[in-house]
Length: 217
Picture 1 (cartoon, rainbow, N blue to C red):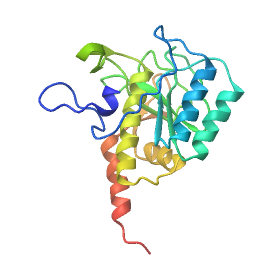
Picture 2 (cartoon, one colour):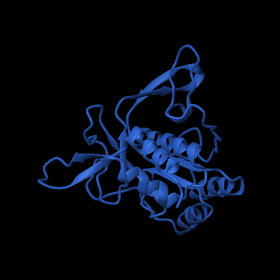
Picture 3 (tube, rainbow, N blue to C red):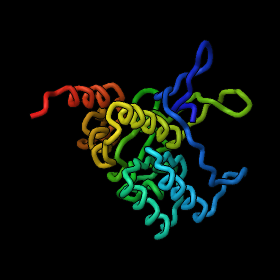
């Protein structure tokens, strides 16, 4: 939540989209576990209450038809769903719900702009974003540094929030296309060809702004 929308006045941190409003939807217990049914209820709540973005900084290995149906329902409602790809550092592997085609799947990069060693790498990952040693808000007014594709996912959600602030009627597929078209290319280690796409907030938002200012034909 801090990475997405923290808004510091004189001290602390500033999130990617400090004017964004966070609606916390609790589906996990205090041990970090959840039933798929609770996650589905959370998604359904977002659809019912007309949320713009669902940030899912979690993942699971097992496919769920009911979860896929809930994600599809959110997508049809025009909600942009962003989810972390997983932290196993494996090739061609993506966690659910990031694996669903309606979701923006996010991998992680390091502070040096390379693929993070813990991040899963796969063609179906749509965009990568900073996920190494990310400082953000923590419990009891404190701050904490964490690494993971969960942190990368929050960066993407923040940029999507800025995009929607400019153009609230953007559709999920259009958002995904803009993020990918204006990303920074990073070579894949050990491969002579091919690259992954890292989030570039300035390019993406600037391109959207320029498009909006073009005279309508």
